Length: 159
Image 1: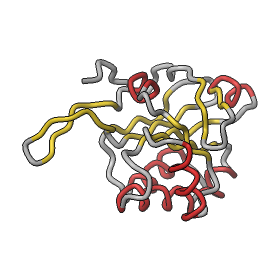
Image 2 (image 1 turned 90 degrees about the horizontal axis):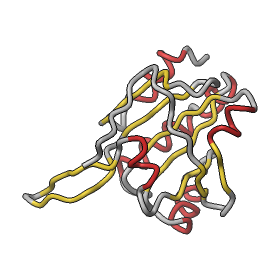
Image 3 (image 1 turned 90 degrees about the vertical axis):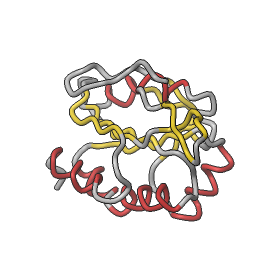
Image 4 (image 1 turned 120 degrees about the vertical axis):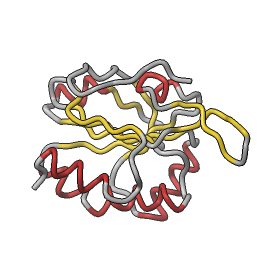
């Protein structure tokens, strides 16, 4: 189980991660450009809930972008899965490949879960908003697929 539980006001853990096209994103480099980051963790590409969530971010992407936010999704799926997911749903943002769950662990989203009496490690659907100074201004562990993007936009005053 993850030992990390981040809170509003904490410094966001720095990361350097590979996205689906093979290039690397570095949190501090995005922030140094004056951008802010929405980092959302989801369990699996092309599952009903994760598709709903990704499409909600897609449908509101222009509003986030217009308010200076960069959206990045994270799952333990590989690059090929991410590419298919992006293409199928026309996602305008990058997806981070975190097959070893290192980024999940840094943000406290790799948790023990249970289904049908069996326990396993998996992604706790969570979203973080990181301001241009690198501080967390919104933290949501265990968010629902529907409604949390609206709540996030309202809190962050996304126009």
